[in-house]
Image (tube, rainbow, N blue to C red; front, side, top):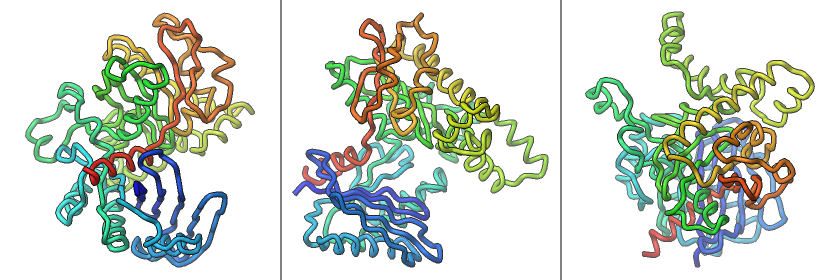
Length: 395
């Protein structure tokens, strides 16, 4: 069997999918949310059947018990699922985890320790890892790291110009994130244009509630917009993206503390901070109706994308493909059109009809004579995690 249970955990939720590592086929998927609240919620989909319930989920262990019960209610107990491995998405692997890694007690503890660099993510990953290893004690568990793909970024691009001893003491450098997505999308884009990924210069724009850009040369990340944390870079749903660091010092002097700054920059900024919503559909509807704040938020969002497009065209010395992916990247023709507007000078020509056509498949939205192929390629992080986990455990 090549079935891999893929786990993507947060502090109050666990997303899961049962995936065939060979084909990418989904056998089942689900979400346990509101973990730790008085009343939690689970959604489990198997085939065309959706099972939704509310129940108490005090911790991640209870969340996995609820997940196992959902599988059983759908007609498959744990022993009948045929799970060959459990693959865990881990946001921060630091400089030490550069490849998929078999999870031992020591590895789990290191993932927790790296929570100093990703306090919103790694502690939740650790809780889910502990609970999942208890729920599935007889199969191997594999950590697949979002940061691993960006280990090829050269020192000039990953080094911050601060005191070198301070940086070394605290592990401060650009790590980059969304690496799993950037990897799979760049490979799919290469397959779409019918060329080896090793021959291509690519710019991938992962535009979801979290957003990042990546410059990829021959299949290797050479620069990326997210940094020490997933806060740096593009404007996002609730995160600020790039700001003047002095802004934080200014607010500290004004009486803000670290927790307030964290909340401001991670949860009350980005599209939410500018326009009151991080749902891009709501933002576009408001802008179309004449809402000035929504229009400004859209313009700020696109401006950040264009800054990174320009920077990465220089870093790569041109590009063969520009690829849009994730929720906004795959679904917003308006963002794609605005991001690529006026780039005819470097060989980008967008076909309005292709761009406006809705599809869930990989597709070209540039004209046939566009020097740079502009593509929309759906991401599939879960299938990639399953593939990497299965490759590791199968030898």
